Length: 248
Image (cartoon, rainbow, N blue to C red):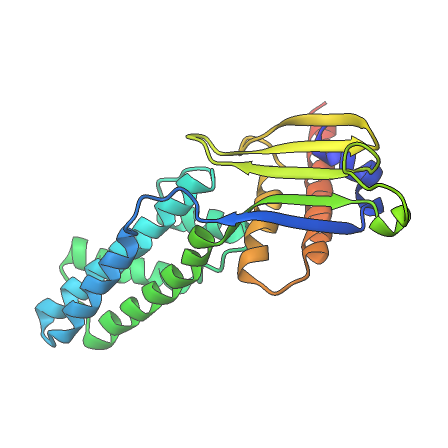
C-alpha cells in the first residue's frame, strides 16, 4: 500500500496530530547566502556605478545560493533554468515571488549586454534577496522532521494510547541523506499497512514536503495543512489515473 491509497481509505479518520524533531537542516555553516547579503549591503554603501554593479551581483548570488541549498537539502528536482527553479520552490509553499525573476533579468542585462543597474534597481535587488533569504532561512533553522496523524486520543480515555499498537495513524519522518526522502509508515491498530521511502520521484513527495514547509512559515493549524496534503495527494492520484487511462 502507498500513501495515496492509505489516505483515501483512512486519512479523514485521523483527527489528532503530533509534530516533533524540530532543528536545523544539515546545511554547511556559515550560510553563504547570508555572507553574500552582507557583501551586497557593503556594496550599496559605496554609492557609485561600481557599487551598484557589485550589489546586484551579490544579491543574485545570495538568491542563487539559497535556491540551490533548498533544492539540495529538501530533495527537490533539479533544474538548469532559473524560472523552473522558482517554480519548484513555489510548489512546496515557500513564497518565491515573480520579482526574483526580474532580479535575474536585470543581472542578465549586466552580464550579457553590459547594462549597469540604476541605483534603485540595485537597492531593490538587495531588498528582495534579503526578504527571500531571511524567510527561507526559517526552513534551514526550524525544520520539523517528524509528523504524526492519528485517530482521536479521546477514543482512549482511560485506556492506553500508542500509535501502531493500540491506535491507528500515519507517521512521516524526513530523512536527511544525500538523496533526502520521507519514511512513510501507516498503521491500522497494530498492523503495518505500509512502510516505505517516499522520494522526489513519487508524486506524493511535493504535497508532503509542502505540508512540512508550510508548518514552519505559516500559522495555519497542522491539521489544516494535513487536510490540504490529503487533497493534493489524492488530486495527483486522480490525474495519474486519468493519464494512464487515456494512454491505454
